[in-house]
Image: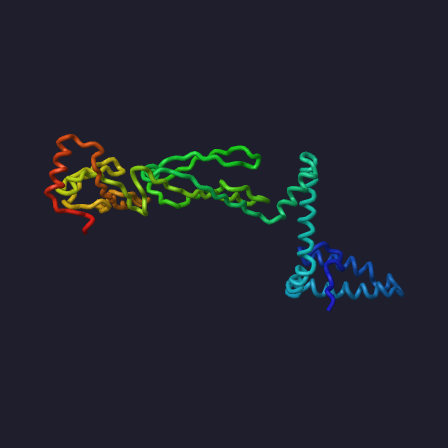
Length: 295
């Protein structure tokens, strides 16, 4: 069934009219297209039928409400969209007087495009074990779109783990069409030092002892990363390569947990011997039956 716009037939602009306005419009149209005024006019005859039908539907509140739902679907929504479009064009003309129509068109075009988030950037930096243990600030340089250096200060939290990434929100590539910038991810590489080697939460170091300390046993102090000295007992007969584990003196995590400090024993022989030491070693050689190559 073909839809009829009863409001248009009665020359009303939209559905927001009162019953009195409908009656007034009906009387006007009925007078205009009355058969007595338009004798022999077939179009006028059809027109007066539509006018009477429109009045019958719209003059009754219940039937008007029912019809208005169909009218809004077929006509009302289109009218509102057209009005919004016209308002946007008028705003564009107004701003165009000041900023130029090209700029307005470009901004409108961009506003219709989907927002695209900028790409994330990944980089990495090297830090010392001490920097990771205590935390530090690192300044890094990134290239911007013009190829110039962009300096960013990275706050490295204490207890950060090797290989962990720090995320800086919005420091990546710029978004498009109003989209958010990407993020910057910085991978942390913790470098071993001459003094310490890091494995997970544990720190490895060396403790140097003399041959007679290894043979007889002794007490020695080991420096930990937090600048405290811990005294440990070295049992007699300890061999090079054996380890002594010191609990809660290793690296730490961001929640404050500590790993262990593991001291690897290395027996060091004197480079130069005094005459007395030489004689003592010769005597030890003569009286000792120990031969490591026979073990």
